Length: 134
Image (cartoon, rainbow, N blue to C red; front, top):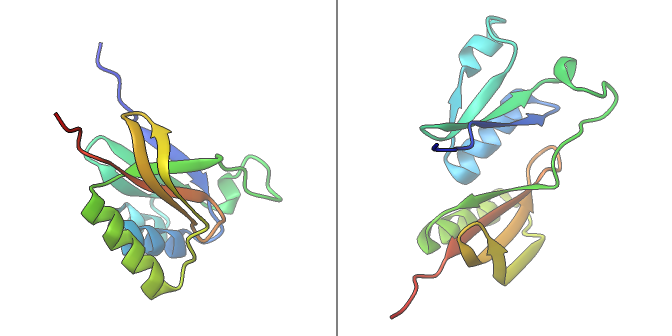
C-alpha cells in the first residue's frame, strides 16, 4: 500500500491574498482560483506537488465562524538553494523569519529550517536536508 498526503485545509481570511502569498514565497500555483472568484467552486487551493494541494477555505467554510482554526505549522522540503530563494523572497516581501534551526528533526531525519507566517498567522517551515556523506 502506497500512502501519500493528498491535501491540507487552511481556514483563511482572504483567499486571493493567501493564494498570492503562497505563489510569491513558495512558488505554489493556484488551483480553481478563477472558478472560486466566479462562484463556481466553494474554495480555491494551491498545488504543492502533483499529488498534494493546500485548500484555502474562506470564512463561510470555517468550523468556528468567529476565528480560524489551523494546524501548528506546515513544513515544506526544498533544496538548500530553494530555502535560500525563499529567504530572499521573504526579505523582499518584508515577511519576517521568526525562527531558524540548524538541526531540526523531520520526516527524512535532521534538516536545516527557517520559520515564517502566512497572512493568516499559520506558521510555515521551509527546510532542506543535508546530503549524507560517505
